Amino acid sequence: MVARIALEMDRPRSGPRPLNPGRDLGAVADLLELVFRRELDATGRQLIREARLISRAGPLIYLLTFLSGTSLGLSPGFVWDEDGRVVGNVTLLRSRNRPGGWRMANVAVYPDYRRRGIATRLLNAATQHIRRLEGRSINLQVGEDSPAIMLYGRLGFESLGAVTHWRLEGRPRLDQILASGQPLSRAHKSHWAVLWRLFSSVTRAAQGWPDQLSEEDFRPSFQRWVADMMMGRSMHRWVASGATAAVLDGYVQLETASGLTSRLTLRVRPEASGELEGDLLLRALRQVAHRGFTRAVIEHPAGDVAAEGRLREAGFRPYRTLVLMRLEIEQQGDA
Image (cartoon, rainbow, N blue to C red; front, side, top):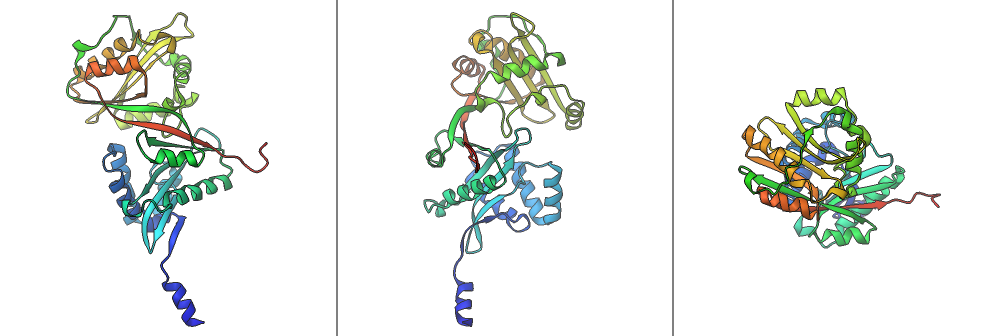
């Protein structure tokens, strides 16, 4: 009997298990850095550094950080343990503004361990966990050319659209942008309700990640103003008025922070597509050039031909397109 127990203890073990922050975060950081090394932006690299810091500092700091909600990268999830080595990971994030909504991130497996069903079993474990917590849906993002799209489709995820990430390095080519000269005005805080309606008119894939935008994201907030001040972040916003005060035809936002890449957001009402993109983009990029920024990025709904044409004229180049996929979860008792 003792010998049989000893053999059981020595037998190689593998399978999914809940992530243990104090033990696993360093290994998960190594895994993500390898698997996503070509895709990591500044935020992703910061999250990996944060995970390594927490793994060295111990579980108490992890717990405090998680409970405070200050980090999106240090959320619970599952790992695949192969003989004591973490070779796969899936991170779970609860939506902050959509009841029952969850997000799935960092689905990763070391190359040498792929095609063994590890990713499928990790995803199933995570889905079952969310179902037990009475979750209603799971969102994830995946590269448009990733073979993982087929895996997610087999598991019931459906595409909600795609967003293309564009990057400008160097000064914008202002004289190349096709614009009509339509008048723009500075956005005012009183525009928040019509801005919310404008953003709601685009595909769900372009309505925010990692969390979908909500009406509260547009409502003026003293707390948000304080946060921007503390982060040294400034917002420059312009609008193109519609036929009535209840409608905006277009909007552009330039977000800047000292020493960081400028971030643009561009939206045009579908009925005005092709008329305003150049004017809005030109106005924001003039500010970029005036401030002397040399890098700018924008995330924009994929397939928007008018906007993509103006972006290319300005010198932007696409570097990745991400597909948003969603799984609706049926709970016991659902009709």
